Length: 255
Image 1 (cartoon, one colour):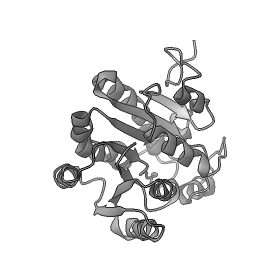
Image 2: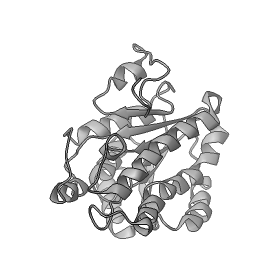
Image 3: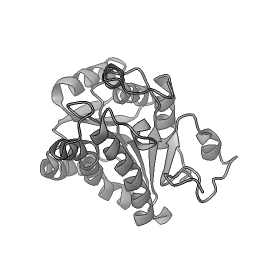
Image 4: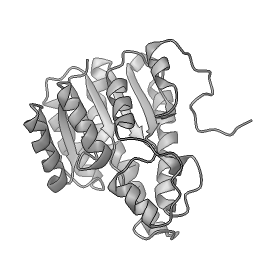
């Protein structure tokens, strides 16, 4: 069982719901993000008897995250870590193709989350155990013209997960997965709908939360490097009753 989880995006939506679920299961947490919203989540965790602390940061500040968050993680006596990277941002102006805006979104959604992971990765490699969850919704699976920078960042996230899994391998004990949560009723989804964005698969909040809670506690690495939708048959894979073919649950062309 994991001892601690490092979590981004805990200030609202899916990230907050994950924090509360893990708190009920006795998992300690470091919530990395903007202090105003993450402090609210921390108080909610404490109210139900959980353990959480806030690491206040801007996900674009990669250098500070690497230096200060690495020290915070290393100071813990936790033997087994999970990292859940739920933080995400949309393009400021819907439907606009702009290089500077693409770079801003990418610095949060991809490299910002990666910087948080890098703060914890040495501890996971040391213990030969780690569970890492990235998020990539519909913007990674099909054209998303309402928020093209967001879509680009999510496609990049899927490929990042595949590369991390290939780089570290099964012998590392660290398993990486990318989950598509579906269209959950969150403030971000409201912005997508308001902009005219298409919503394809509506899901309940407990679906991505259940996936994350199950994955971070799983002993198997069968989903390592995969891109999984919450409606896929992932439970059977974690339970061992279903084995994936080499090309299942990857972002690839259909032959």
